Length: 249
Image (cartoon, rainbow, N blue to C red; front, side, top):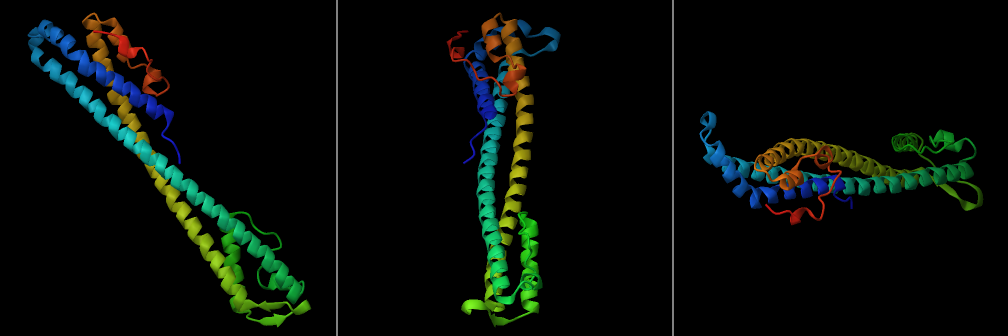
């Protein structure tokens, strides 16, 4: 099964670091700043703490959404792989059938037999083209029904061949349709995941940047450094350091 991407894992960890700082350290720090800012330019200092808390909750919400959509995308990728494997099995079976049918037709009806029944001299590898060739063979078998004995007791039975070709053709058609559906669903899941990631980056940069600025204003440089939304952190390229939790307010 496809795994959750390391970038999403790192982004989630960075969001938890910011949320932890916002929940553990920010209330005290922000409360101190609120007293200094209260009344300046009409600012209501009492709103500073709930504003930062609301930002943290929003970040956690978009992080959960991003994780959920990334897991859905991973699941769709896994289903896509299963459908592709089934398609490959059906293609291999269909190619073998075409080659066996061509040899059998030639041995019983002569050199002109394969051409008469639409059996190609070179067996296609492209699934869509192979399906088209099978459709043509079925049409020819219906157009020229015959039961004829060849060398050493071998018999060409157009009805029996039609039944076998029809079965293999239907299996291949279903496999191709299923793969097409899975590919579209995977693409849709990817687009939804990417949109969630873009939204997460905006919210993460805003919330983490706000907390970092507040910590700087309050003189807590280490806390500010811990939550600062660097480009690599926002892109999920850096995981939080193990020493992050050691910083005290």
